[in-house]
Image (cartoon, rainbow, N blue to C red; front, side, top):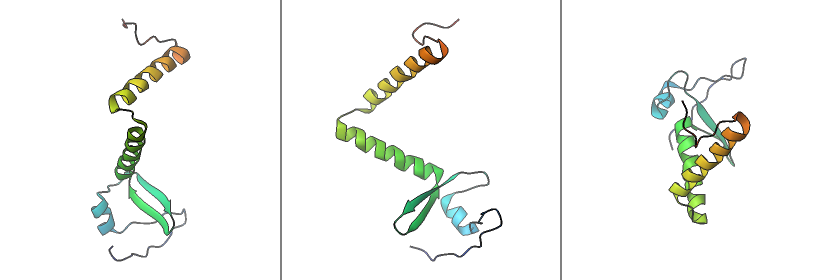
Amino acid sequence: MSDSKIVRVQDKGQVTLPAEMRRRLGLKKGDLVAFVETDEGYLLSSKVAAAMKALDQIGEALREKGVTPKEWMDSGRTIRGRLLKKRYGIDPARPRR
């Protein structure tokens, strides 16, 4: 693990990440980051890294249940179709004009 850095909290709770940290995380102005609570404090990661970790956890849970990625995607389409029909009166099985 690299050296820790000390930064000051500004009036609105903002902190400036040192340039070296932003470069290592590949962060640019406007990017989202995730703060994850751990036993030692908070872990900061890029939103992409957090999303990939969440997808890995979902994939692992599905494998444990014996669900294939295709089954998962198909069930999502079915659920979205039901919601479209119920909430908006759109039948996804019917061709649109």
